[in-house]
Length: 79
Length: 355
Image 1 (cartoon, chains in turn green, cyan):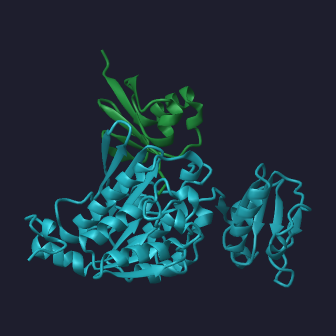
Image 2 (cartoon, rainbow over the protein chains, first blue to last red):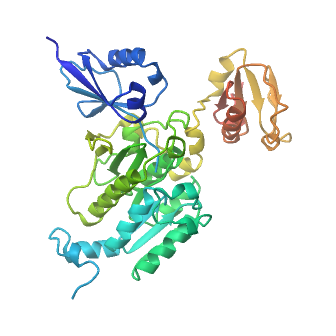
Image 3 (cartoon, each protein chain N blue to C red):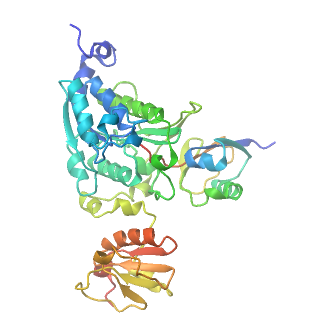
């Protein structure tokens, strides 16, 4: 059975998703993951956030085979 | 002999050496809001010798749930005035400098260069990116913290070799449309208290070498669950390229504009498009005039009355002489005509292709 992947969401992204953690069936790469998330949560389209696979930022499409966790990290401006 | 700092001097990792470092430190605190209040309280209590206070804002009644330096009796006063009065009354040995204005690309270098450590307690993206870029160019350690509703982020930038900065985390500024601020979303008063206290802790770590600062790591903290998430940062070459290369280049940048979500394109890209409207925002005496299809002229000095203006295309390409005023104009126009797309032309008429 394929490993499950935990998605940790922060700030506005968590609000859009409605919770700060969701589990997904394994996804092969970050592009595919974003497509799935944006289809499920259309509000994520146009929202700015960084993406980290197992606590390391990724800037391009990256394989997430075998990864345990992906974090969706939006910037905060408040002070 | 007992003194004010006895309880921290007897900490082995601080000692008299650490206390001397605090006494000799000069720290610039940018923003005297929810984050700035606890930071100032704790750093002045810890014996930091010199603190610069930057904020152009006045105390308002809606600040009081979280900005605990101020009370009802301070409403309407400059935050820098109130804060420096309160702190200098408490501690006779502290040197405070006040900068009762907001930082911008023209004044930021001058202020920041006079300090050893910078703390970003601001509440908006244009200033955060400005402070980050200036600190990067000046190699100044920067303690960063930011909040959103019940969450916070903390990190330390530009500390030591191969150090990361805010651009490595978020390369491009988001527009204010994409991320609302506290005044729009609400915040529990204790959240900036918690995050500001973490920032003060990081500052003391940087100054004294106590424990390990959050260098190349970012803490994400959730005050509802107390969950923490640590992200490791690495220098990102692409993001570094977005930082201006020099003081001169930075001074030409409009950070408000960077966060406005308005695109900039070159003449070459612009001239390829059809069905657009061109807008010249130069004053009528500025030369040479360009011969473009579907061109209108509205000098920036006449922007106070935009109600008379009509555009016949959904896409408007805005230009001026050098590409700076067209950015300001595009921001104002976008405000007034939110359903049209305004694009600024890089370099203005000075960069217009010769043939």
